[in-house]
Image (cartoon, rainbow over all chains, first blue to last red; front, side, top):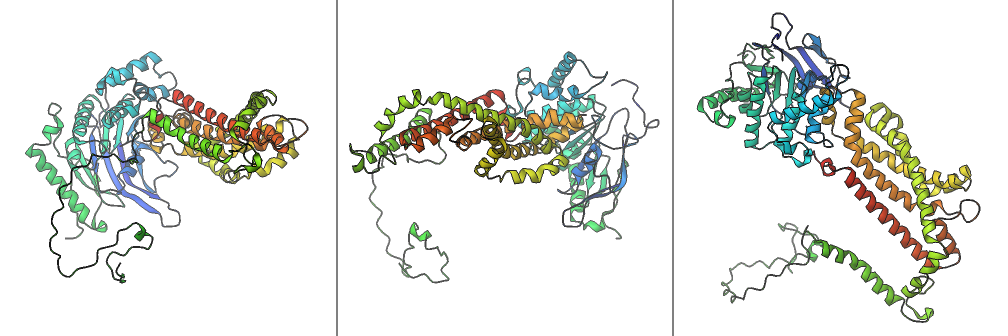
Length: 304
Length: 318
């Protein structure tokens, strides 16, 4: 986290997707087109990564898109188009793109502190921090995600769901990823815990320079957390709407309070209305957009 | 009971009627309201004997677990009562009386050296098991981790799990004569066939999200196998080993069937000898000893695995 952060003019965008499509072959059937024509650009804005939230009906290919960015399933290249990370084609997973799942975030055989240190210990070569440094870093992250020293020696099965996601978050962030991908990270949590986690992520993100892409099934969560909200169409999934002017969370107001304000509710209503429109429009009448931060909303219908 | 018409709304199968109360005959006119029954005194609340999924206290658990033995021994005394073997309900050639069996204990212990034979058999089972584990664990981990290795050996493993174990006893004798190699080899084959598919399944059962997480933290393929797949699957693998060690122990009698030549001894051999001389008391005692040793072996594996994996309960969900 040094001061000489790249500016957008000098460096290629963090993430570029050009008409990306991925097909899955199915045994004894036609191939399944999971996503198609996804075109998006994510730039660093003002020395800071962007927070993008992706909403869409279930089974529309949100996770597939995230997996493409993470570089999973590279035995299965993109069927069409290309995906670039810092100008380089994504060819496999790496520690520069952290991933957080809804569940199974923590390794069951490691204690909390060892879970956080896991990624640091995987490193090799001269950059690998020494073992005492790794332990200090893990302890530091333990505190930053608001876990106590008493939790450090616990195993994941002794923790609540929210605490496990804190560990998973700390484990990803300790590696200082350039991009953090989150697949419905808070969906399995109860509501107060979800708000707490939202506060935590808002707070941590302010200190980080990472780009975050978060899948959510809650429009309110997406509007609250995201700088931009992308709406995905039903399968074959493509980006059909982008909201770039959603309110940005104020780190000093708890999520639970901020989301109860009428001004926030109005904004959620607007995005929800668009989301519903997408859900109710036949797939073939939806046209893909280029999600580049301009916040354009193409009309959902084709002609009229 | 009224005849049921096919259109009856709630038809019940004949067997259901065995415990379904017959429907009251339909009445056109409402019967005069019955006088309310006299208020009965509230009976003392009786707790039913069988409750679904109730917790059993340790004391009661011990008592209940002894119940089948008590019943069995009572039955045993009853069917073998009578001084003259011919007048008993069950002949002593089939089931000797408790007293007769107890009387043979010292002879079994001292003359037939039960303990030494148990230890001999145990060493053969552990030897065979060790050979099986040394091959099955690395191979199973590789098969469960790498799709191509799994595809290569998958069919072999499926066929092996249908290996008719008792039938290969004569084959192992042809390969290794009747010495120690034959016994260890037979037990190794028998346990391997069970162990391999179980290990593969436990490695495959590790949730894919652990693998993806590790990759996105910068793990290499080798690190994913050694630091995620193997440690997460390990409690399951140890469980599979416990199961197969038990199976191996029950095969001991098959391994020690030979009656002469090299490699005599062991509990299986003891049973063969006692059977030949019609000493049913010792056959029963030896069978009981084999079961007891198996149970002790199993319990110690469970304790060992609990000590080894404090996160044991974690394997179920997270």
